[in-house]
Image (cartoon, rainbow, N blue to C red; front, side, top):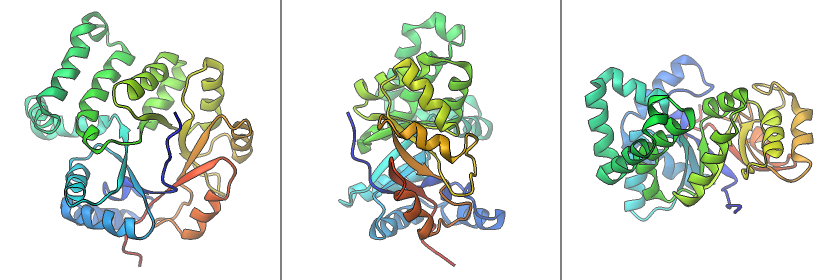
Amino acid sequence: MKTEIPQRILSGRVFAGQSAATRERNLAALARFSDPRAIRNALLEARDAGYGAVMTLNDERVVAAMKSLRAAGNRFEILPIVPNVLGMVREATEHGLAGAGLRRLMRVGAVGFARAALVGAMHPGRVLAKHFPTLLAILYELEMGEMTRFDPPAVFLHHQMTDLALALGNRTVFEDFARLMRERFGAEPGLATSNFALLTQRLEEWRVPISLIAAPLNREGFLMPEGAESYGRALASGAFRLIADRVSVDSPTPSEAVEWALARPGVVAVVAEETMERP
């Protein structure tokens, strides 16, 4: 299954104050987007500017903005990145474990929470043994319980989880993710990574059925440890489709950098940082 992905994708990093902009501008963006209505308005402006989707972690502000958008009949895709481990840790720190659990229950609903609990109940030994793929499966259920209402065309494994599993040689993480996203959520599985060439090599060796990869691609070689030539070799077979991220070290992302990335062979889309308020 090869899903059609919008060519221009808005990065959710701008809403979280985690863009490539200066610290001052990130703090200003974080304050500005503390209100879901501001995010909703930014998504509408992005749609009018030619963006077709937002790639984001599970953020309750973005979820609220998307709900408002869809309720008004506006179509805009969401490409979730899961799991948002840091977000869960932050909630537990701010609200305590019980408070964080209650907030999550209120967002995903009883059915979503029950599904996550069922995964754990079916594999108690693995949970107690802290079996990495099983714990991830529980996190997927908790995160996707909020996202399924938007019927996302693709879901991406967080780059930290991808690169950790890659470093450990844990093929099962990728196989389980691919199966669960397709069979359970009806979405194409994608992987976010900072090790594009090595990841594609392992996926081919392990015959894991994932072809959609989000990874940095830019002329400066920023966050591209294998170099630009390795991208060309990995994409030459046509087995993988690249969503180019971090196409510039600047934020907002210059339109020239977006066009440059879209012109590269094998690139099907670009993730750009855009506040919709260019200086």
